[in-house]
Length: 165
Image 1: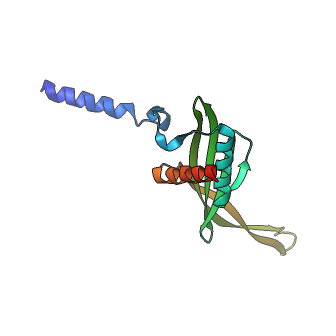
Image 2 (image 1 turned 180 degrees about the vertical axis):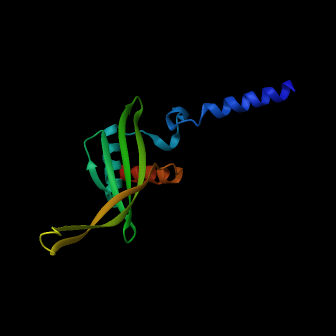
Image 3 (image 1 turned 90 degrees about the vertical axis):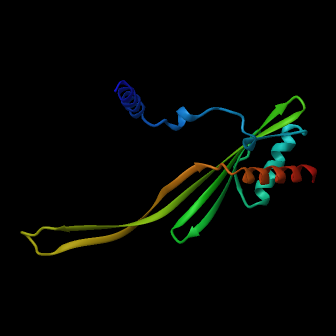
């Protein structure tokens, strides 16, 4: 009987603790997908990253070294699109440089809402004036950090190719 009481108490405590937030789950461990060492100095590595993004159709929104942001939009279907953002930061190392890269993907839907306005004075005049309009609103439906290691590997290969050009 005591054993069931202990199990019940542990289950109750586990249920009360609630789910962990993303901040509580963050381990701050090194992950090779988000950084790569290069033997070149930071300036040429940043320039190679900028050229790799430009070569693939990204728009550079913040190109001030040692940080840059590349943005590329994709049309999913009519009324839906996605934005891929690549953030890169170059840093100095004793034997060269390190390139930190993080990408985010956001999805948006365009929702159309109809608005109708009617104005009139029913007791004075039976005439009323109405106005109908449609308004398009962009709604974010997804936003997350890109975790695909292959995506980052392709980017680092493109940077390396730009370095040797």
